[in-house]
Length: 405
Image (cartoon, rainbow, N blue to C red):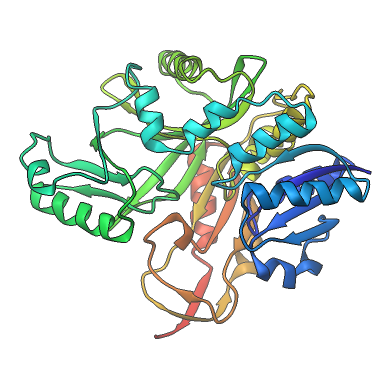
């Protein structure tokens, strides 16, 4: 049977919706996962025909699994991942085993923030940056002339983990020492602090033609870390603003030599110019696929699967609706006892989806990364403002009851 092989998933969000999309397209879906909890919950993955547990998703073990699937007469049509850090590896294997033509080298660069900065060093969308090697002499580093505040981040940071804004040399030295202690081999990036509205830009590139599928303004809460707590799908971006964004995106795509790939960029508009915060080799996770589906009737993970299958994606908008997603965070730590208000939230005007992530007994905490967002509400409205009001109001009905640690 014609099979699509997926390398890892999350319990919900874009990667899970990709599994469902593949099954809906009529393919046999096989999932390789490191997570034993998924094996134990296989009955909750109705869209997965076969789930295979590997202790480590190494290239060697994945190749053995591919060989075993071929022996059982699976016709593997493509191999794909929507989960870091397996995106480029899946594309490499898809090219090799299935004749796909995905831009593997570009995906590899995007998986490493230091490599991305170096590759785009001459691009005007790149902010001022410095890369700190693991062998750095800390005493020499603090005498460099940096402008504060400055952003300090790990080259392999994901979901806002290990991303800090520091105000002076003392703070910078403290944070870098902490990060080096956690992982002595990592590279650390110092970037200029950019002040301006932040947007997430979903892009699909097919046969060298790049299409901006969606532009989503991000509402950011900054406490200890930068946490995105709101997403507003933009329907009408101002003419000059949009043209400058198209130019910036196309120049980045060209510099990375991307011919076939999905990716998303996080950008800030600063002093009349677009600046690249970071770039990732896949659709954004969480509610992003659902947001784009509700806003434009485009199922982006399905179209990405088509790209990997060598089928031309259909990115035509069927309609346009104002959509806002509000993410739920909490202010204290504890064991989750119960959650109330889901049904009431679902019944509110404009609400399209309510999702609560944690199960009873899970330890919850204030948001130190995107992974500490514990649910979301997607809502529509006649205007962007109304969509946001509907989402935030609905989310206010949801209450988490905790047992203190």
